[in-house]
Length: 324
Image 1 (cartoon, rainbow, N blue to C red):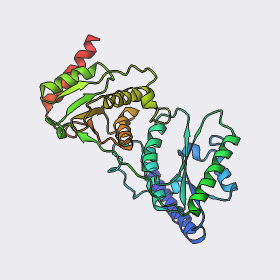
Image 2 (spheres, rainbow, N blue to C red):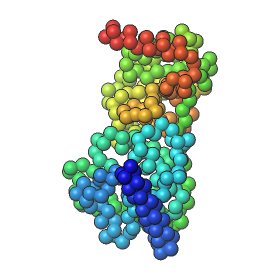
Image 3 (cartoon, rainbow, N blue to C red):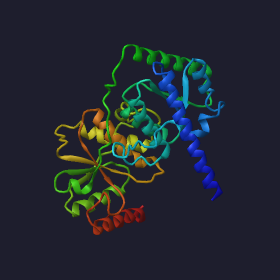
Image 4 (cartoon, helix red, strand yellow):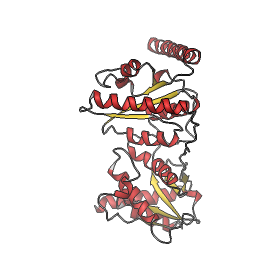
């Protein structure tokens, strides 16, 4: 009980400090850029881990604000970016909305090489941002010179952006996902070639009059088509599924009104698999392709097709396990 009381007291102090900082900006720094440092708490406040990036910003004469002091508590991104189950991802996406609404506030995102969620989160941030923000990826080899150069270049970009009065005109994208019941009898459902289990699930769907098939594995082992429109160190299965979808869309006769892609997802993670559908939805929109991404989820939510189908699908998957 005492701990909860202290936590509430701490949160109130954070809210007071947040108000103080942003009131200060409005009063004394309204014509100068300020930078929101978006990083995990255990890296944002450790100068050895983040290469003293906060002091570098301060030494350049700018205000550096930690993500914990950003007034993002009331910003709801669940409609635009559903299925974002990582708290850090929710905070960073909400911070992007805050940056979009504040002319002189810019973001500096600190990530770390091969850090699981960061690639997925960062790509979704890019799709929501309406003005420049900087991503700095660090590892044990990152040196001061490289960070100094990138920071200075970003400061110059921000300065030019403000001087010319650039408007926030970048197009933003929102994740668009649909349940299976939305396409039954209307479209052919395409499963990515992630495992043999998909053949069993596809057979069950066909038995229940949901036309479906499994996509072919890409002959290109480098998965160049998927890599060309993906940034960061994403999962290999993500590249496999995206490559298969992109290859199918390149075939003659592909009609986005006739086909839809299935992708597994989850409401609570922790695996990055739950973000595949969101990223692919955003990717296809950026490429100008309005194709449906169909998801399967918890019982009674996305499926909406009855318990018998779920039982048959589960039986098919366990049968494949036994055969293997």
